[in-house]
Length: 502
Image (cartoon, rainbow, N blue to C red; front, top):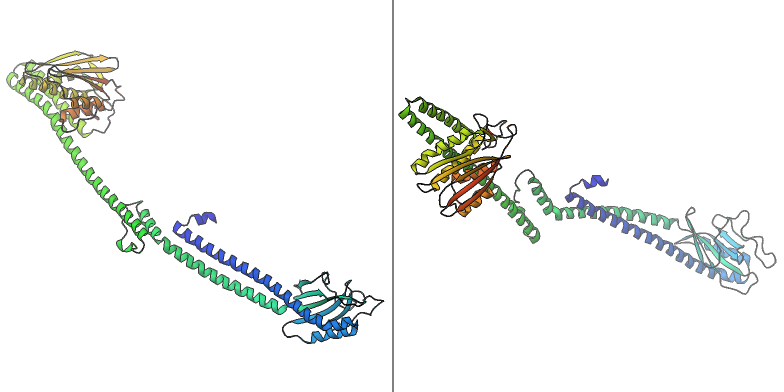
């Protein structure tokens, strides 16, 4: 029962509880009133009986004083013949020991017992007389209700008289069936009235509680809708202007709903802007990364045009162009498939370092800067080739552009246990502090540092490498990269003609 009730909505449980409490309180108070009325009824019956005995005692006292048993019986019989408000069924006079002195009854048994024996009245009752209830005649005044007979026994002591008989108590059995019937009718009337009134009050309490809870129910409905969609504001006509507290609550909810809608719209615009920015960065990165291999390939084509008759120069230029095409494809795949891991990788080769030198040499020659390679590596190193090529190409181009004419840019490569150490040394004015901090922390510096720096930061992060920068003003910059070696079957990198992560 409680489980079923707990599953009801709060806006229904509270009014039901209010209605139940009102109903129980009304019924309980009515029952208390009925019980109090019953006690008052018994008290009134007892007082009426004592008043009746007062009149009867006054009538029978002369006969008792004369010790005339026949006169006592006549008085009792005469009292039975007259009744208006209450009907007496049986009257009796008892002696001090409880023996019957005289009695009269509407059933026809009346008179007195065999008479006196000495100075004592005969024993209580006889064979044809109705037996009195045991408590009747006890000391003092008393009352006994006989529910089965629908009557009441009342007795009280007679005033003392100077006689040898000395009767002690007068007893009356009064018919109260009419009073009981009226009390029963009163009880049923009160019960019926109580049920109707309690039900009416409970219904009114339920309606009032529901009315008071209408704002909470309305707010709950709108909050429930927010589980699957944005919160909807409450219509202005539903806001009660006569209830300032509820109006403030609804207004606060409407502000929250409006703010949520605005935030959602703003998030949508930010997503669109971010998507556009990502597409722009991807396009700019492609242009930046493809431009350098294309420059080298253009230089190789010029070499073919000038020295195409020489087999060595022709072979070298064609091989370089072939590797350049593969590099372009790898860069394109790396940019377009940034978040798609590949099953295998191509390890870095010495030829990749020489290709990077060739790609940078044309720009270096135009700026009158020498390129020097200091490489001490095996033929293959277990690091992603395409990513390292992109990284070195950007570092060397930045170093060439920073170096003064006549200077030298050095590319140094060493293997140290399970890492690859790459160093790029230039003779420029040194890097700015924000550039140094961005490269070492892995967070691109604010503003517009250029695509080269952003690409370097991104590639070092994805290669899980470490960067250290020694930048000295007017004395050049030394950038050291430490890249962990990876197993060929676990590296998420490119195949022979594609890249998964760059």
